[in-house]
Image 1 (cartoon, helix red, strand yellow):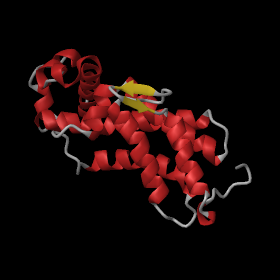
Image 2: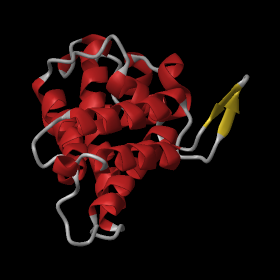
Image 3: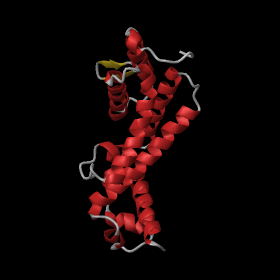
Image 4: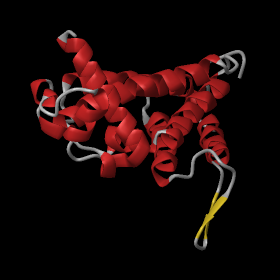
Length: 199
């Protein structure tokens, strides 16, 4: 078995553990056992558990990109539909892969300056940026930042795309209603209207 294939097996095993039990079930020894290699094998490929988690985060962003691309491909081509689909793919991935999503964005052991992680996370953000671009032809990043804050906030809080939910005394509106509000506010600015004949 070559070095790359063994490394990939360890990453895949780590992903399986995270998906099953989150960080509570994660260790180098368990990862090695699931991959069918010696417990010393991960040390030859990763700088401890942080190194493995960083590699897992980079791989997870690749899956994140795929999830959003699939949602976009299934949507109509107008700007609003593409934006909604991008956000739906974002939220669906977060809900379906909570353990991975936590490692991707919140785990303090992950090296955020890792080149592979930076590249894969940039590809994911580029999809959101492209979906927002028709709404900000003057390259104003306000709308883009507002959409990212909204979708990521819903993802982290576990609200997903569901229609209104209740948390204690707080009634949380559905994601689509909030996104529609952002789009409506954006349309009030004539310089920020989507540049598409389909809109």
